[in-house]
Length: 218
Image (cartoon, rainbow, N blue to C red):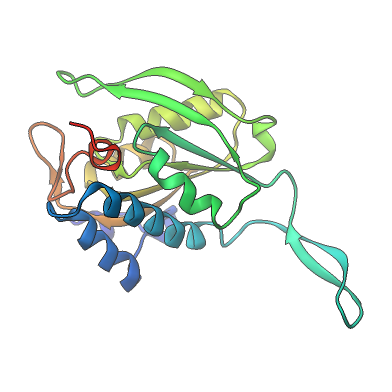
């Protein structure tokens, strides 16, 4: 059974269908897309996905004075937003979200994948405080095995994070299953659900190594 028939919005899994997101992901996949264009596309897709993921940010009314009169008008309430990219590819999505919410605080989680076991290993974690009072958006372009995503969310929870959402541009069914089963309370936003992982745990058809393509490295 297809993963979209197993998980849906009622489970906190939101697979995007907006034509602009789908168009830009197709451009992102192309082997002919260079580093500069790839970076811009990652940023644009993150912004479009962030617009949807942030639809439920809490609001409170404050008094403002317009050129006509004073009125009560809504602003984002509380300690607002924390964006936490999974290093290093997640950095490419940060500017897209901060374009929507420039006051957002930014944390960082460093994880690398063992080339043999494909298991993630932590090497860095720095989060804004007080993290427990913030809506936390974890970003990573790829959700492959789901190991890095699940471990990143676990780290955030260990530091006190409660209100967590996960944004990825491309996901494999295996990654969604792993992240959802490990953290069923976390909303998952997916730009496009791909077919499967190959024997090297790369997403197929995917878009290659997102970090290498963002930063121009091999």
